[in-house]
Length: 431
Image (cartoon, rainbow, N blue to C red; front, side, top):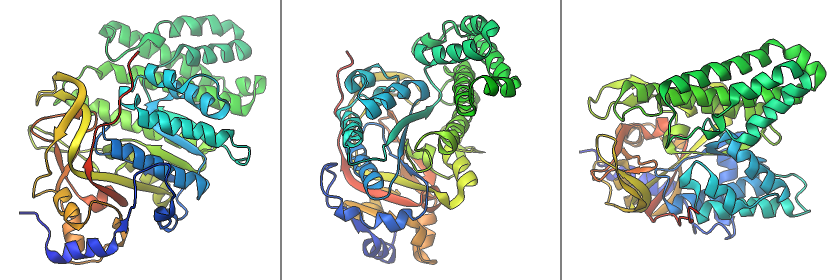
């Protein structure tokens, strides 16, 4: 059995930071200790054990508010399409567009919720307040779904700096704005996209000095990154239909996490507001536990999650805050053990966590709290928290048999927010 003894539970109880509410609009007094926990970190990553849990979303909204209002963070970036997020950034900065429509059109259906809409509207209201001279920017760091507007920006830039090549860029990018994971093009088309995106990206790199002279360093750097994201998308769709337990899926997942880390690094170094960033993604992306376990074979493969890349690059400047829960319900698509979707996105019940799990013991210590895992004393407490023990991990899918990963809690996260019971997010209409 993996259950913790009374010494461990007593230490957790004595060292938790109780959270008084999940309401994003409530006073932030209970979050005051976070200032010391975050310290000088310039990237704070907020995880979630499910992409469909209401309590995760609203608690992350509260944490974002604190980091913006009390600690001066100026860029909020989500696990979302890089190019689709650009229109949301326009909205939160200027009010251009309609937040509800932007979420509805977004490739990430899991974010089409009232909770995320409320968060975006809060960002807009914060930026619209004349008292806030330091605005908060919005970004996506995932490599999916190029937009026509994003591709056009690259073509327009090339038209300015290299007119003879611009028509070719438009031809090379033709059809890429229609890339969809739901209707993947045939493999030969995917390969053509890969080669076309590579050609544009390499042309931009080869003519760096000329293009900068005809524009500006910042304009060139931005367009080169846009072209890099297009290249990333085309590389990822090669294995987008990989089966759940296949080597191809692991290859794609590894590549995707590397790309996301690469894009976050660019935002941190170049984007307006990027010097102090809040990240929103699933637990497994932000964490620093470096393995991939075959769910059938049990074989363990070394794996560099996004969070590991960021930890290696930024060290203590990168802080991870994971989320755990004991029971409840969430919105997800139902999937069988073979990776086949067998049920629509809707609410599914989550039975109480197993007695062997981290969550079972964490709930014995409390129902809503924050715990700094970096202050664990050596001995019984550190041995139990280091594990490994089972930890729940759902993402956007629900599997009836449950979903656990054996991992070390203290090696995955710096800080943990534990919530006893979660409920489904409030989904917005698709149309």
